[in-house]
Every structure is written in structure tokens, then in C-alpha cells.
Image 1: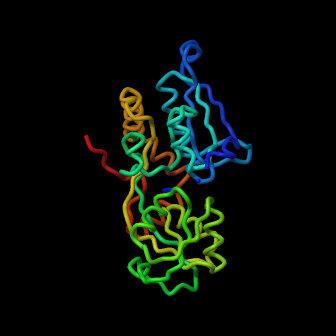
Image 2: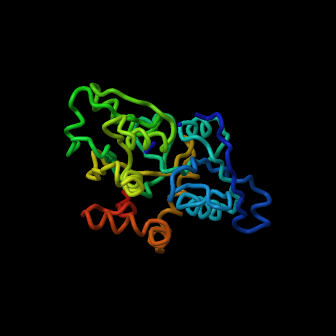
Image 3: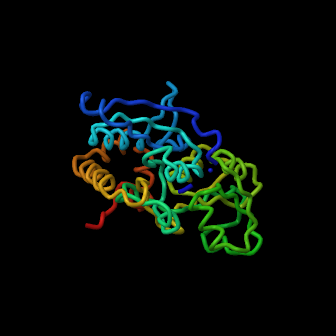
Length: 269
């Protein structure tokens, strides 16, 4: 996801103490970058704190390291730059682990499986993904996302409207200014539910993707620690509990359409 610029980034922060106090006092904070505009994975709650699935994962990672944690709310398309320049230590922000990003950063084992799907204007005649290839289709894309990458590569004859927030993308579809927006399944489901009178959703994936924790290249020990935490969370039911807490409706909707749920994935050994 998917899915922005470094300026205007520190919109919100969350400090959490983790692990043994005497140990964490001697270690630097773990600084985690996230774009908190993507509920239920990362968002700013009613108390002004960054919350969601990504925060719970980040807390567990910091706890395993015996470090305090700080979440920095950054624009999505600035996250990789922030990581490479040392402003943050890792990224947990519903980020797709793809080959283009692997050229500059590394990734943990995946923790989510999803797919690119389509949010359509209600009046669009499109009934399946193949119909996006008709020359002159008008698509909105969110800058820096895998939806944008896929669309520009696979749909070269489309006309693109480029914006840098989910809200702006949705409104282009709602107002009928474009035929479609290509984004991840959870987002497409949620935005369709919010705007049922003006949008339609095609959830069958155009392309399957996985999300993972982003980290600097060469930090093998950090990656090992993160992978151990993710494996433990898969094994002890943590992801199932998070699904019940944050994604119960989405889980049922995906099940009803015969789609695998986002936490159902096999990790290569």
C-alpha cells in the first residue's frame, strides 16, 4: 500500500515505556515511523494518541528489545527517507515489501497479506479489472503507494490524477471526477462502506502484496529480533486478538466473499 512528503511530518507522537526500566534507561528509544492516517492499522485516536495494529506490533518489538518506544507520525512518502537518514529506526505503516523498495531498505518477515483492489465511482461501467486497460480511463493515485506504482506500469494509457492523501483520493471517486482508485482491499472496503451511494468496490486482487516492518539494510540482528516477535505473535494468538479488536467487520466481509483474511499467511522458513 501502499501507499506521501517528509515536510509537515511530526503531527503527532506517542511515547510508551516498555521492558525493564533499568535496562531501557541505558538504551536509546526505539523510534518508529508511521503515517497515522490509515485506521485501523495506524491512526490518531480521540485522545490524540497514535493507535492501531501497527502500534501494538511496535510496542511488542520495543518490549522485546528492552527499550522505550516513540511513534513519529510522518507522511508516507517521507518514511523511507526518514529511515535512511536516521530520523527513525524502523517503519511500521502498512508498507508493502516490494522489490523497488528493497533496493534501498530491508524488510522483516511479512505480517499482513493483502491485494490491490478497485474503488469505483458508482456510475462507472467497469465490472472487472481488465476493463481498466481501456485507453483514456481516468484514475486517481496516491503518491508513493504501490497502487500508484502498479497503475503507472500496467495502465500506461490511463489519465492520472495524483494526490497525497486517502481522503483526496476518495473524494475524486465520490464526486465522479475519475473512474477508479487502485488501493488495498481493507481501504477499499472501508471507503465503500462509508460512501455506498456513490462508490462500488471490486475486491478481487489485481495483485497480491504483503506488508512488513521496514528497516535499514544490513541490520541483521534487528531483523532477527523483529522476526522473532512477529513469529511469537502469530503463535500466541496476538494477531487473532487484534483482528477481533480492530478488524472484526472486515474479517467477516472478506470471509463472505471467499477472500483470505489479511493475517492468514505462510512465512517462508
